[in-house]
Every structure is written in C-alpha cells, then in structure tokens.
Length: 139
Image (cartoon, rainbow, N blue to C red):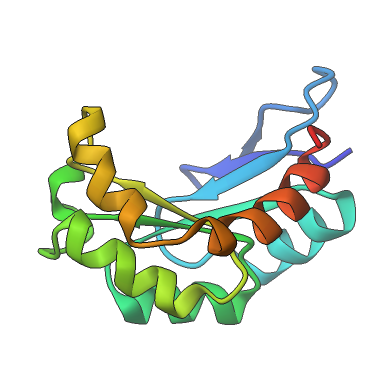
C-alpha cells in the first residue's frame, strides 16, 4: 500500500501508515510532485493530479508524469496566477493530450459550468475518462 506523507518540517508525517487508508488519488498543489512519488504512485495504481495556473505549469506536470491536470484560474484564490479559469481551461485541454483536465475556480452554478464544458467535446472526455475510471476502480 502506498504510504501518503507530507513534509512540513525536516521529518515526514504519514497519514496512511497502519490506518487501512488506500488512496486512489494524490493531488499536488505546490509545484511538480517529486519524481519518486509519481513513480511509486504509478506502481501502486494511484493517480496523481496537479494544480496548474499557466501552460508552462501544465507542461512541467506532464513531463513529470502526472495523470490529471487541474486548471485552477485566478478566481480560485489567486495564488496560481492571473489567468481566468474560462481562459485557462481550454488552453490546458489543448496541452493535456489524453489526460483528464478538471477546471477549478469561478464555477459555482450550472450557468458557469456551461462555458467550461463547451471547451471540450464528449469525444475528448470519454476515452480518457473511462481509462481513468477503470484505474480508480469505478468502471
């Protein structure tokens, strides 16, 4: 079982050791996750997601082997940059290849969800979504 740890000091704290927790997704919010984490997660069947606020962030995450990109616009707190979610998401979808892209920030209603969904087609979503769902054990 993959042990989920984080570092907030020189030592690591582990939340899954002996707890019976088996993570299915690890999300990195602070830059590119360590290569060892991505490799080990892949061996354990755990997907790795990462927040991106610019195209260059997405490219770094793809190069690192991240499975899912989260396009987080400035409306989600402003700490990823100044690009709005509705501008950022289609750009990241264009870079992502077969990786799923989630949109984060500025989406609070169905009316706001419509533009996010219009940036992709059903054909874009289904193949990778089915593959990822199978990896998550829900297909």
